[in-house]
Length: 149
Ligand SMILES: [Zn+2]
Image (cartoon, rainbow, N blue to C red; front, side, top):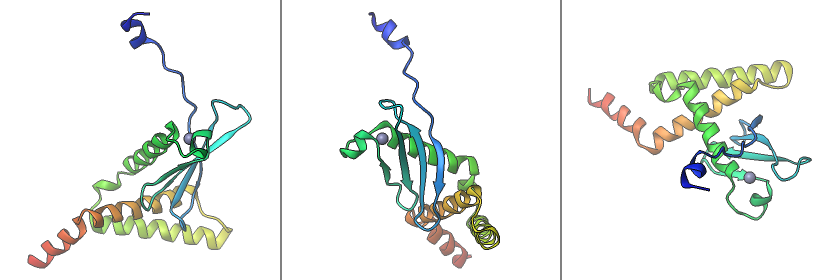
């Protein structure tokens, strides 16, 4: 097999991650993915939105080895943040976005006993973006510029 053949050989298709849960108490978002080694097995791969740590219960994960699922769940979360356009919000808009999501989560939980996944994901995203801005000192800088004006 030549190098050109290797470069153009199709990659083995990886199974898609399917949303399972977004827990606003723990900050953990979880996805299911079919095992490529055992047709009866479904792996759960998750990401802690408070610190971006990833976890997987696949065979590699059980042995504390890195697996492709960990990178995939991090990509899924990054794509979710991008899709919500949350990084483009001002601090005030971000607070309103997160407050509205929290209100929706609380309202649905009170009325029907559970909230919508989209509201829980929006709340986790708003919290994650807020933590990112604090970690990078962006919010403090914005407050300082307001005081200087
Ligand atoms: Zn895995």
